[in-house]
Length: 165
Image: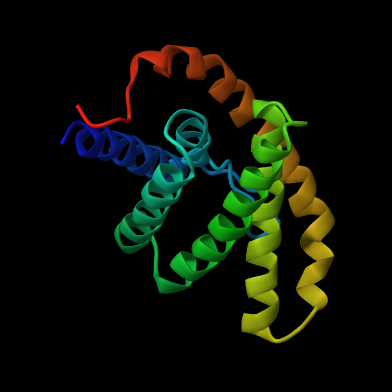
C-alpha cells in the first residue's frame, strides 16, 4: 500500500511538471524542443525506485498528460521518446560509466531521437532528420540541467522506501 501511495505521489508530481511545462512558452522555432521537466521524476525514480517504477510512472504520466493537455499524436510521440529514453538511461546506468547527469543527458538525447523517428514515419520523409542536430543539442542541455537537479535531490530521497511497508 505504501509503495502505491509513493508512486501515486511521484505520478502527481510528474503531471504537475507536465502542466507547468505546457504553460512555459519555450520555443526556438524548432518543433519538438521542450524542457522535459517531467523527466526529472523519471530520473529520480530510476535511481531510487528502479526501472519498473520509472517506466510505470512515465507511461501513466504520458497517457494522463496527453489526454489532459494535448492529443493522441502527442501521446504517440511521447511514448516513442519515452521508450528510447528509458532504454538509453538503463543501459547508461547499468554500464556504470555515467553519472546521474550523464544518464539524464542520454535520456534527453534519446527521447528526441525516438520522437524524430516517429516523425519520419508519420510524415513519410527523412527530411525531418535535419532537426536531429538541434534536438540533440537541446536534449543535451535540458538533460544536463535536469540531471544536476536530480543529482541534488537524490540524497533527500534516501528516506523514501519503495519496499512494502
